[in-house]
Image 1 (tube, rainbow over the protein chains, first blue to last red):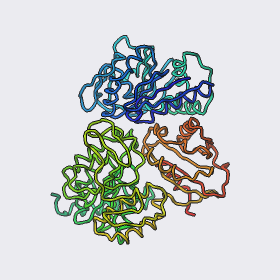
Image 2 (cartoon, rainbow over the protein chains, first blue to last red):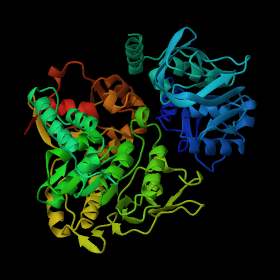
Image 3 (tube, chains in turn green, blue):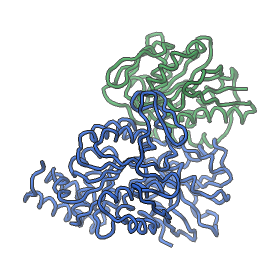
Image 4 (spheres, chains in turn cyan, orange):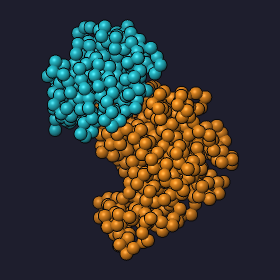
Length: 225
Length: 404
């Protein structure tokens, strides 16, 4: 049984981010793996899971989400090897510090050596990131500028949009992957969804043909123009 | 205080009318925004001066603005000035105000512009319908809008605010206003108000009410429609709308409440609102290439959810058209906040620039779909087919179809 835990969807789910859980569960199911999605609500214990998903959120909810996660078993479980895929605000709160509500600085979960300050301008628009030689396509909408410590690997180089700092986007440690491409980024990038799923299942996956492949080709072609 | 009407304003008003006329005559536009822009450039206070000595009602919120504005216009009776073209930013408002001299004015106002417009037009009533995620690539975050409204209403003074008591973000926006009529109207979408707007702690929703541990809670209501019959300030009204859906009952309750504060007889207003059957082409029956279609506008998760709930579960084909142009918001991520699972059992035909995004969403929702690439091969139906479309897609479908 593949357990997918969607963390605080009421707080961190501004842009259809719950779609990522749906995509992973369906792509597992169609390959014959049983899967379940657990919506971890405010006040719920963080359960054991093969993968935790963190979405985007507005400033207040993001701060509350960080506070609740800090008081939970989440960080300890990730340090024990549980896997996290995060987008947008989820990315920010996994780092050491982040800014919300003006320039007030808040403590993140410190799972990755990344600091987020308020960027000069909001980053809103299409985002394309080169990840393992392929284009990851999505949409970003955030006010942060995220800097990684030298030894932290970015998810990829930004080809269009801003990402962390206009140069790179997200980060990737053995157990924590993150991108600023918010919302259902896994729906738009089936190949990347299978990378995430493969990491969660701990195995290589055979290709799965779906309509999402056509969507991906169309988006890549549209953004290359 | 705004100046008295000046020569400059007269020139500006004339310019609005002239440019709009030219725009329409040259078939370059619907002729509302361009003229307004010229007028505002000539006289920045034009909005204030055009609104002076008139009874102004403003309507704002994420969903239902156009319908509620139409309900207030119809319900008021007589000649009413309104921006029924949907141009709801200052240019469009100036154009509407310049087009008619009637004392009664109803304007739908874009959420982000409400503060500027309310300060300029000194309205008698402001109706605040709801706030939820919509075009976040443009307006950013819903809570920033609520915060801006709160600052506005705290010092606007002599205005009656008609506000949805079941939407915590609207309550947060309106709670500091001097006069508020809180309305208990159907509000199924509360996903954007899970955490308290005051203290960010979780809000507790139970038994038709809601509260936060900081004390922020659903206020005492003056108007109820969540249970039949509708009661507006003590008057029971037999609501029997032609327009479908619980969301239109909410719109009607707010519209009738607003009318009660500009001295309109409620029974007469009720009859006129009940008889309304189509608003700006929405809900209207249309024909196209032998198909009979009902056009439904749905442009964000809350609106789409409401609209899906009005579809009968009779297995008929449903057409859905999705664009992601500037007016729609460039980011179609919201498709994953819409419970498309409700369409299981229907066959869904996918139209629009972003039909592949829609098809992918439906695929993951386990809903049967067809990506439409050749419109000449669509299967005929003896039934009326519902067409759900977001903003620019709706405009396209309205333009290509004819009334039945």
